[in-house]
Image (tube, rainbow, N blue to C red; front, side):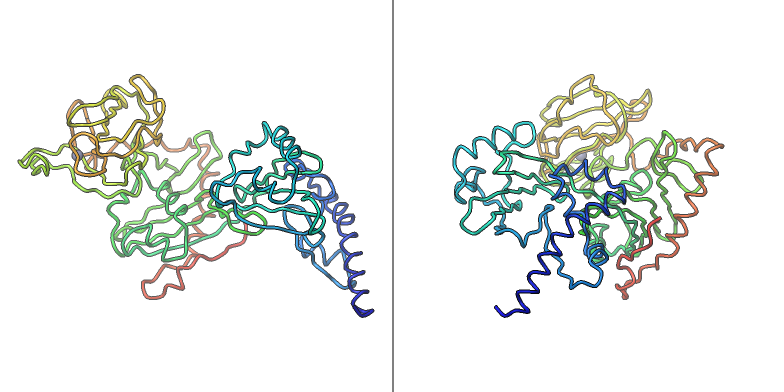
Length: 451
Ligand SMILES: [Zn+2]
């Protein structure tokens, strides 16, 4: 090694040392004590983890800059690092023993982990990292990362285990899409996530029947994207959404300044209209309400007084409204089924369940959207589906033709505040270009400044 090289290494070393000191002080000045508490590492490592590349260069001024590789609050360059994914049927003790951690040490870690982490919960496919001071030395840290939001830090020398929550940051983003076949396919075509499809569907669940979307429909959405250390990890809330169904425009505006948080239309009327449009998400209607249907198993005309939603085995079935379970049992025709009384006028029934959800029995109170069972093919059924039946005043009716009384609007004194929020979101939605079938580039999500 020539002299300049040695000098560079020396400067890099000094830089590292300075960073943990200065970084800690500067960040203390930023008042980030909340973050400290959520990341209960030893102080030095917590400090190191808080220094971003930008802060680093600011701190270092004109000195040659060496930005270290940091992860889990450690400067990785100072360790011998082993990274991997948990293999199937590999246990905590196996992994540590392979790296030379003595059995007593492992026992101590397992014992001290009680209440923080059950080491039997290591999941195949999840990342882990082992940090050793040197190639031949006993590992000093084992880190297990079950999700982007948290990791577990095993300090092998100290025999201690900590759960570390990573701070989540949220950015407001917008997106749009043109429906070609389904909402899901549109999301995928536009590089958006299923999670966003699900949350958009939630916003419009009382308004739009997502089983009958029209080709050429389009949507725009303002939503929160969540990040951990700069990486997108999930979707937060849908804050505002626009849906154009054959030229009819629908808006959903998230408003949480009152006790009744939820989605409202442009006039401040809640979107929640009493009942969900369907008891399963992402299903298709395999057989509509039809008083003159030819029954596929019985081979004769028999009225079909329900709506069948085909969905894979085990798909959650949701109560379409608040109510009380009045039946939860089995018959040869219905299979496992649940009936819910919503009020003196309306009741709903869900047939052919694979099984009931926990706590679903006669007398149980259920909330709208609560999982009451799982899709199956019990009773007279050719395949997995839920036969959904809707009673009005004791008579079975086609729920898809019903209209319900208009919901109560926000109180008058709340409206000015709501309108201010609404106008802000509507402006954001208007800035999103309308998606074009042939110009997919337009419908890519675009970033907007935080609001
Ligand atoms: Zn049916």
